[in-house]
Image (cartoon, rainbow, N blue to C red; front, side):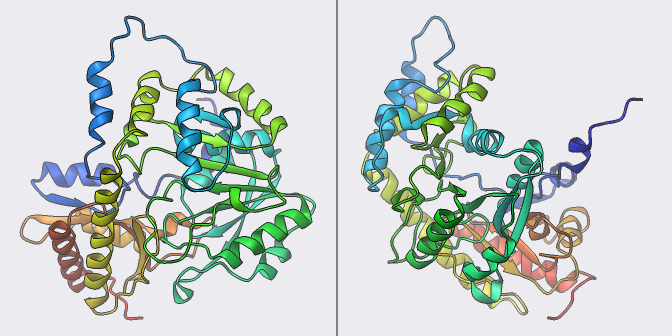
Length: 400
C-alpha cells in the first residue's frame, strides 16, 4: 500500500467534528444530544434569502466569474461601508466560504517553512490551512485568567525571525469571544508596519459585539493598507453556513492577482450561494437586530449558568457566540468523548468541543472546552444542567 503524504499525516482532526461518530452512535441508542460543539446558528436565514431561492429561474446553472458576481461585490461594498470600511468592488474576491479565503491567502503569501504568529486558543482550521500551505504556526498564548486578552506585544517581537511572514487574528474571536481593543489593534499595526508583515484578519463575527467598545477592523488601521488581508463570510450573520460564500478582501493589487490564480484553478464560487448571499444583504435591519438580541440573551444565560457550577469558570465573551470554559476535569478530549460514550441523564447528554484542539501544541487546553451558544435559552439551561450532572459523575474529575 502506498504511503500517505506527510501533509496528510500532520493534518489535525477537527475538535469540532471529529466526535461526530460518537454522537451518531449515541443518537442510535436513543440519546438526545444538545449540540454545543459547533457554530451552526439555529436561527432562520433571512426571508429575502429564501425568496431568492424560490424565485431563481435560470435554465442553466453556469459558472460565475472566478472572483464572484460583480453585482454581489458591489453590494458588499455598501455593506462594508456601514462599518467605515471603504472598498471598491475589485478589492473583494468572493470565495467558497471564509475557509477558502484563509487557504488562498496562505497559499498566496506563504512559502513552505514560512511562519505566522497566531494568538491562541485559535480557530482549529487555521492550523489545517497552514499545514496545507506548508507554513508553520508560531503560537502566542492568551490565558483564561486574563479573559484571553492579547499578550504583550513584546511577546510577539520575541517570535519574529527571518521566516516570519505574518500575523493572524480573529476579531471578535473564535473560540474565546474576545474583542481586541483599539490599543491592541494599534500595537499589532505598529508591529506589522515595523517588520513589513501580512496581517490576516478574520472578522466574520463583527455583527456580534456585546460591549460599548468599538469594532476596530484591520481595514481601519492606517499605514498598513497593503499588508491587510481581511477574511469574511456570510455564514454566521445570515445563518447561511451551508451556502459556502465568503470573501477575501485586500487593497494589495499584486496579492489579489496571485489569489485570482487559485480562484481560476477552482473555477468559480458557488452559483446559488452567491444569489442567496446577494439577496441577504437586502435583509431588513430588524433581522440583524433580532439576531443580535437573541445572542446577547443567550450569552448572559450561558455565562450565568456556567459560573454557578462548582469548579467551572468562564469569562464573559465580548463578541461572537462562543466561550471557552475551564472545567474541573483531567482531560478535555477524554471528558467530551465520555459524555457521548457513557454519560446520559434522563436520556440526554451534551456535545462539546475540547479546547485542546484550538492549540497548536499538546498540553494546552486540557481542562477547557469551547461552547457555542447557538441554542435557545431553555435548551442552554438544560444543556448546562446536564454538564453539571456530567461533572458530578465523571471519573476524571479534578478539582482545580
